[in-house]
Image 1 (tube, rainbow, N blue to C red):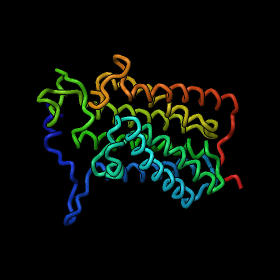
Image 2: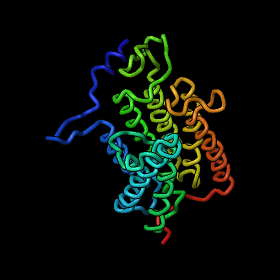
Image 3: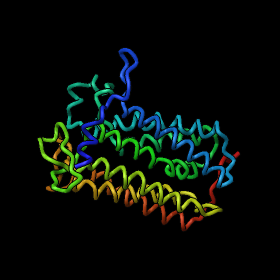
Image 4: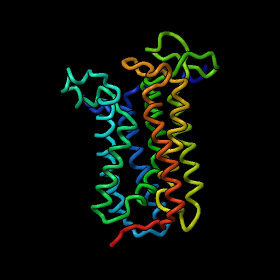
Length: 271
């Protein structure tokens, strides 16, 4: 089982600088933000939008803060199961892990809206640009989850099963890599193919496509992923991840329909 051998050869700590330990998870966030910014800038040029490098930098800073803050708050609210009510100071201990994609998404939307207002640009155009690069961030993040040996899947006899250190001594689905492939690579390639059309598809189309695709893929992968121990299954067999992903599918489809109906052209700065 080659994936098992790969996992056991990986160290969550990328390198150390004296007492400071730099982890792959932190580097994954950094790589995700950098790649998303580069993709956003490249697509803005291809779509002939009047967005400068400084504009892209402003948007990415706003989104970065939104994701980090939102992901942590989302984890505390959705997955904390009341733990942080008794340990409020641990909310700020990001080095102990605990980040929620759905919370990060809300934070990213807020950060994008603030940045759009700051540079006087269209929120939906910025959102479309950002989500074209966001899957690369998801790819790096899920790979870091694999390195950390967290968020693993259910027991399996498939030849690529992995025996994680805290996984009970059985081979499990490397669900982190399933998510890296579907939520990362596949969504990125789909949006890349859609982005080749010039003039580009109308405002909101890419954002809606991203939400719908992510919601579907996340919902399906949750069937082979072990739910968070503190929550277990909801309503018999539904996980919190699935419950939070269903609205994304609905919102994504609704946004695609709205986009195609209104046909608002992609624009950069509004001034």
